[in-house]
Picture (cartoon, rainbow, N blue to C red):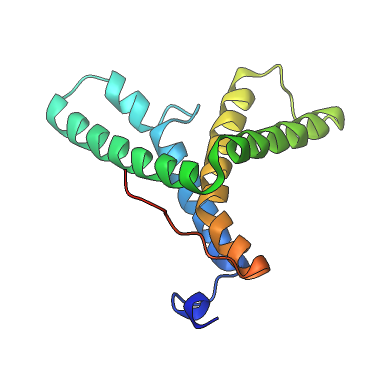
Length: 141
């Protein structure tokens, strides 16, 4: 049990922080408002800063996707995205979302991707708190 408390307590605030950071990263990379890395990349200007920021973003995404894949795998990623889709369709059924609007759909896809990353980053902590089983990596590839 001491190993669980070694890294400090994990609660709803920590999971929410991971969600906010994931949302920030994804929406800073692309969002339908026109103010994102993607739009900056397509604008005129120097390529040096754009290349540097792009490489940093790729490195961050690779690390996060690998971490998510290691913890929840394809099945967890698929189920998380499917739950987001179900919630989206439920909100659309109550006329709270307009799925005919391309901007709304693009934003929902970005939010879904951020949620998948946040679940992948939080699942191991939640799983160990609920079951007492700690995820470890068997070998380094």
